[in-house]
Length: 405
Image (cartoon, rainbow, N blue to C red):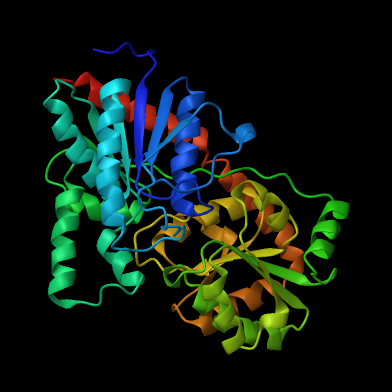
């Protein structure tokens, strides 16, 4: 049995081009950083592509990549791709060979794909007498995410994915879910072993000074006196970006002084939407937006918006970023959003662009409320810290290691 204060060896499996500036990667990185701050040794096994963690932001995480056999593969955004099957086979090999030398106490697998990879690797490791515990960290529903990416529409193939997802939800010594909704869903499927809700944390971002705020606006060609509404995140369909862009003309008709910042990637999916709705000149696109530079964009904004529908079971890391920056937030009225924001949000009720526009206008028309709502959100963000996330994960690790056989 491990000492309660012993240093743990943790291997994270990340079947993704780590690091890219999007939510899945932020969760992987911040969990790893929190665990290193608690004194543990963390390695991350991942694809051959992705950005290196800036040295000033890396407390000692070692990132190990698969071989660059698919040298032409450069996809950074989320979504299925048949070539990932080859990458995942290589990642099984990387996880296995790295584990034989590193001898981790815990293999912490991210998303359903990573859980499958880690499960195969742990079976192979048992042949060599190693029995690391497997933590399955689910970031949302596999099937519903495939549907939201418009790769599944129904029928036999969707039924197959549901069966595969149910099997994966039952793997691991413990399941970890990133949202309350997803935890409830997995609990209804999982036959043995508990399910823990481990939420994302919020980065507390200091407010910009008036001069700094003006400099950011000038640098991004944003009118100095505009009411700035910001979205940060991917421009892919399941994030609700088209709903947001479709809402912009209504907001502009109500108040012509509003200006939008859309920050993220890939830009080639966004530009056609801006043209279709005729709002290109009223939107500043920042693409890509480095995760470690997000404070400037949020600090130059007045209102934040998260147009994602609650149809994948995913958490909303951007919501916590907005709260940590002290911004009032517009979003859809979902259980997860209500639990995060309480009275700190303006809620769109029916999932449409019209409803989202109405919620934005409601806040735009009450500038005197922005500061108080934003400060309340900043206080709420104190309840969602990455250090607390790391502490909870460590407790889970210690508990399953007590049952080592």
